[in-house]
Every structure is written in C-alpha cells, then in structure tokens.
Image (cartoon, rainbow, N blue to C red; front, side, top):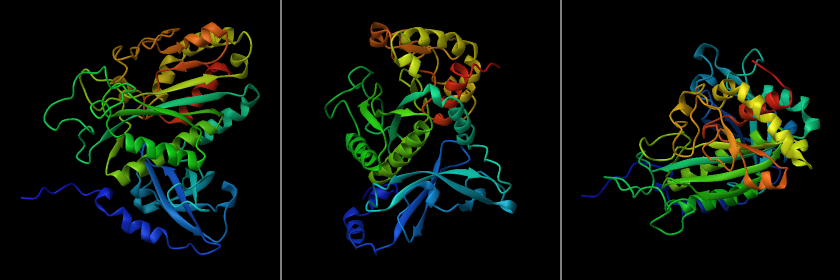
Length: 369
C-alpha cells in the first residue's frame, strides 16, 4: 500500500512551474508582493499587486488594504485594514523588476494595529540617530517536517545527544542544509544585510545573522529575511518554527541574540560606554523581558531556564565571553577595549522593532520604568 504524504508545496513539480515563470513578463508590468505582520505578532502574510511601473522606493507604492478579520487584526463587521509601504526589496522569487514591499498595518481610524511596533521604534530611532546605533541579530530557528516532527530526527525516538551538531558537517550531523543555502542566496539577491549562517546546537536547528544594520534597517531587514525563509521552506515542504523551545528536555532552545553598539562604544575606549550601559539594562530587566517575545515573557520563560547557554529569566547577569549571562561582552571586545555588547535575552520569535527600540530607549535615552 502506497504511503500518502501530507500535502505541501514540495509535492508539486517545480519544473512545471519554471515553464510558466519563463514566460516573458510584459514591459511596464511589475509584481509587488506586499508583506506584513499579522495579529500574532509572529506570523507573516503577503499578497501581490500588479503595477505599471517599477517602484524605486516604498513611497512609490500605494497604500493598500486587506481583511483584518482573517489575520486576527479586526472584527468581520469592520474588517478593512490599511497597508502602508515602508521598505522595498528586489524579489528573489519572481526576480526581474519585481519587488517585495514591507508594510506597516493601520486600523480603520488610522491608528497603528496592536502588532505594529515599527511606528514607535521609528520615533525612538529618530531621537537617537546622532548616536548611530548599530544592531546585528542572530536568528535561530528549527526546521520541522510537514507533520511537525523535527526535520531529520528519527520518527520513533531521538537523535544522539547534543555535541556534534553545532557548526557540524556531514549527513549524520546536519539536516536541511539545502534550505539554508537557498535562503542565504535569496537574501543576498534581495539586498538583505545577511552576514552569515551556521548549524546550531540542536539537530535540525540553524541560525542566520542579519547586520550590522543602523537604526530602523534592523527590523526591516530581519522581517523580510524571515519572510524569505518561510517562502524557501515552503518550496521544500518544510516548516520553520520560531518557537523558542519547541522540544522539551535536554535540548537547546532558540533565541535571537542582539548585538548592539553606539558610535561611542565602537570608538577608542568604547568599553567604558558598554560597561555604563549594563547597569541601565539591569534596572529595566523586567521591561526588556516583557518586550522580548510576543507573549510578554511567557514564551521566553520556557527557554531562559539558566540551562542550555541561557541566563535564568528572573536573574540579570553580565560577563566577558559568558554565554550563560544575560549580556555577554565578547572576549575580543574586552581585548580591544571597544566594540559591542550581545543581549542574549530576546527569544527567536521576538519582534526586532521592540528589541531595538528598548535597547536605545534604555541605554541612550535613559528611560526608566
């Protein structure tokens, strides 16, 4: 008896699709994929619009709308939500002059949707732009089969314990490299500031790094990198989860460690400014924890246990080269006396707009609770 596989995009013949994608696109027609964050604060939605010119900036793209009752962002009796274009990228899937258009979501009364944290982040970044804040986020994620089982894991049992998988090489150590390579190349085409990638500690777990990005770029580039990852995985029939701890037990969770610096930290004697920022971060630890995942800390509590290269969620700590600390100062930074700090608290499903906004409000604007 034949095995019936769960339906997924990978069950279709991509060679058939390529036949249609090879059809010449008419002149003066451009497909613009509008991308936005849905009501979960984690999920990404998109839909396409044909335009009769190639937009050069998000300002060239018209405000559009969508049914918010189907994305957890409005009621059916008042469902229209507005998409305000904010960032434009080359489309690595359709290529040519086609674009990906990242959008902010606004309600019927022109107020930002509850999951639209970009507008307050933008206000903060405008206030601190003279400090030139740089960010780099290390996005960890886990690949799952279409049945929700970790990709590459035996269906009845577990792989060997953690140890050989981190930055591993070989069919018995890494699972899903094709997906990782496809995502990397697609991000480069789209102009994403992707800095690298590696296999992570748990088998089937990977990481890519985006940055350094200045100010608002961090959130914009990471959200589009996430969109591209979901699209690539869709083609392979694999699921990407940003759940910070989908597998219980003696397995690493997934974070989105945020590397952060100001111009003062990067210049000579910058370590002093890094050390001055750490007590400020400690005073607002609970506020940061609340903002570092979409469930106000509940998701992160499953990851930040004090084990598996994490600090405990209720305890703030900092140290040089300490991956069990809330804030790590890289050893090279300490040696050079300048550089950046790594905030290891954000969860893999964080909103980068919230993370970066909190960092500048706490360390530059000296906000307190």
